[in-house]
Length: 147
Image (cartoon, rainbow, N blue to C red; front, side, top):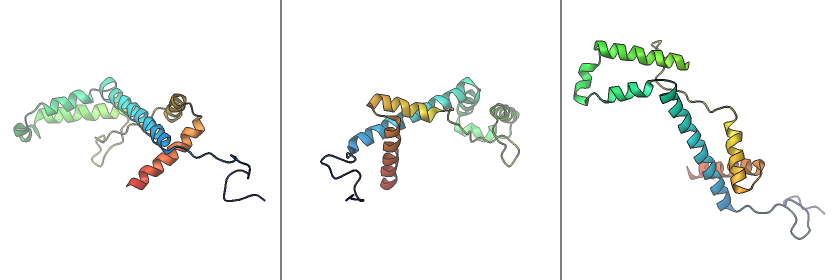
């Protein structure tokens, strides 16, 4: 008879093999690191290559804290805000409640980046992409249980 609680038959060595949890952790961490690097590259490209937002940010931070109250409301502040709004409009940011472009920038993943990262991790660990996908589910479940 078939034992429904176990995967595989009754032969010696049949069924699913247990997965080393350290491998699951290594695969999950490698995937997370590559995903983080991808995000940082997107953010850098968005702020430095496609817009002048980083320059605007650095310009504001160069003003001493004691002088920032005087800065708010000045002509330079208004010009600066309009320039930032123009840069954000070029990015296609949705407007906020005051009809200005939102200062919270939405960074999207590049098309097919998840598949590419999964393929890279699979190649690095000598696994199939489906195994990496399954290990990632276990890794995320583990992280969820930690919280």
